[in-house]
Image 1 (cartoon, rainbow, N blue to C red):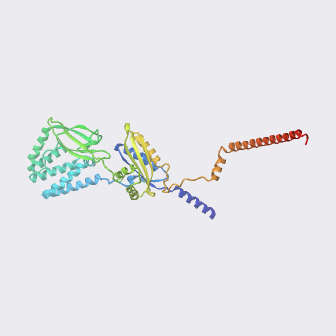
Image 2 (image 1 turned 180 degrees about the horizontal axis):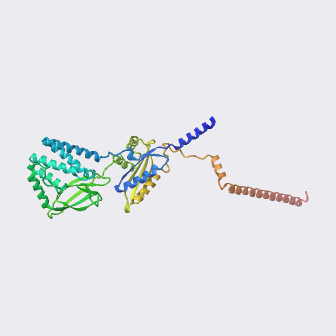
Length: 420
């Protein structure tokens, strides 16, 4: 019984050892065009995640990006609004202006999220109206009118009411009359790159990209969102009364991930074809992995994407493999190309950190055994055997012939000498 148990543990131990991965691997996919990278990353990740020889650790898990929290930002804006209201109630003008402007700035950045949370931009409207009162009592009539115009943009039905102090009746009435007289106008927006989602006063437009939008005259807040790019926030003044459309051109900055910041400078060194740069070893140790696959994409001819890749093993401080490939430009072709390319990088190399064994030289015995096991052995043996037999027969024939010739010569000599 003990013997059986011991045997079972041996089998289980061997199976566990066999199941151990050869190493931890992560993959960095960078370069451009940026639109091709998501599909490429998916394909590369799918192959490595399904490779039982390694333990795959996505770069996004090892280097998580700092994420913004719109709910937390809106909560801060709510706090600024509340504190600004309290300061104004105590006629503490400067702190009131500072807090209300801070609240407005935050609300403008997160206006789509505010509209979604509150089903409208009521908090931003409240901040502008409070600010108009603060400026009014500070004697700043110009900024009072600016704040009221923003309020009318958010609430076109706004008129003088009990929420305003009586002293503001005239200036509110003038702002209302100016708003009604201006009517509507247009703004032509052109985001770069094309395809950005356009929000106007917190509401998304039906279609993305460049477009001309008709709006009530006055100031409006716009936001442009695009994956892989920093959001852009802008304000535009729309002129009414038949004026030419306002123009707003916005360039969205491509966001560089922390992985890009770490690996992008190394790619040029990898292209040199020499030894692995020391920074690559430091990166692997920082991330806690044994293997790093680096893939760089670049625009190819005919809409295709050219891929260059390197597989690095920190345990040996060695680039195990370099590879190149070309993938089609569609998302499906890029995913498929990424899968094949990842498999190519890990094929034909050792992933366990051990050096490849030196080439084996066959001994004479191994060569002889290989020859005996080959299909040529018996034909060759038969041929050699046949030649040996034939040679023996020829030798015997020649010997017999020569013997007979010698006997005949002796007989002839006896006859010539008269029998002596």
